[in-house]
Length: 141
Image (cartoon, rainbow, N blue to C red; front, side, top):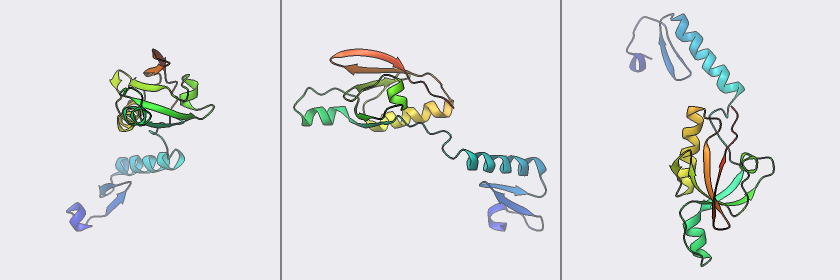
């Protein structure tokens, strides 16, 4: 503990990745609260689209179709976030909350940003049958 906290002769507690020196009651209560919240809601901050995704440029190119940046959807699970937003298999997501989506990695990063900001109805732009459409993701936290 001395190497981690730099303290000698005082109680040192490590709780929820926080080093607490002495008897700091407020720090102890905060750490315990964070642990309880993580235990009761381990997936907080994670948004699951509920659809298989792949890089549209790569997949369309493999099928001899014109490349289009974005993320193409495979199977969409009924009742999922993607289904509630009106997305269907074959749709190509090109923007989420105003940010361009060029790959599955871009989509994952945008979903993380939305989760961190607790945005409940981010905008969604996608292509279906050579037509650009807009929707919203009905996210609930």
